[in-house]
Image 1 (tube, rainbow, N blue to C red):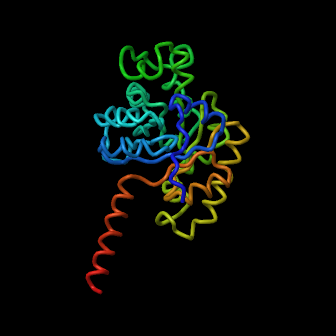
Image 2: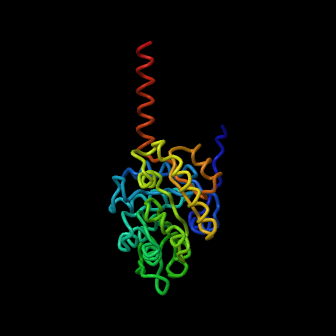
Image 3: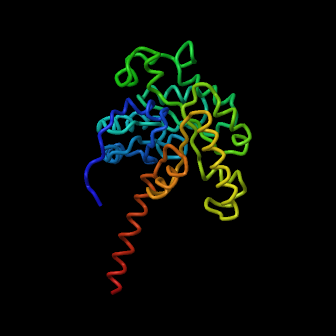
Length: 266
């Protein structure tokens, strides 16, 4: 396996690359650990997604996470906010995030609300942040800031599937993003990975990638490993987020424990 570093990319170009449907690979951060986030941000992922919805990293930690990502100058920092609430979206973007992932969007109306929260007047309702991190990273001209910020909405419920075409057609949406666990549950799965819902999930994913392609927007998904990311990119997704820091921490610790006990038993 090659150990050559991946090409260095300007994080400011993230929104443009996303809109261009370039293949992007990201990593998920759930832990409130800026030192660990800083290390991961130097590996060469295109973006680092920070979980402000389900992780243990809440609003006071968003700023530190974005500082940690920016310290390496390689990845774009993106925050998943807790809900489509415009206040939360504005707070996330004021940390200097290059984009937001908005969960539980179930209609074109909610998608429009998310878009407007990401854009300044006259395109939206975002308040100009002034001399905080967003200005340091993205400038002070509202239209230029808007051009450098991505609005990504999640497709993870039955209602979202019902309104999929209208959501994808929403002006200003840069991407849709699949939450496979919640989407599986919406399709009847009793747990994530339930084979009873496998066919329905596969059909839904094909619908989503097709709709995104027709409307010229990016389409992403969360996956459990790099091999799955490559598979999803080959299937028509344009970006994929790999696992999470908390998952990999547990997996690594468990593997070392198993190896130690195996040697001890021998």
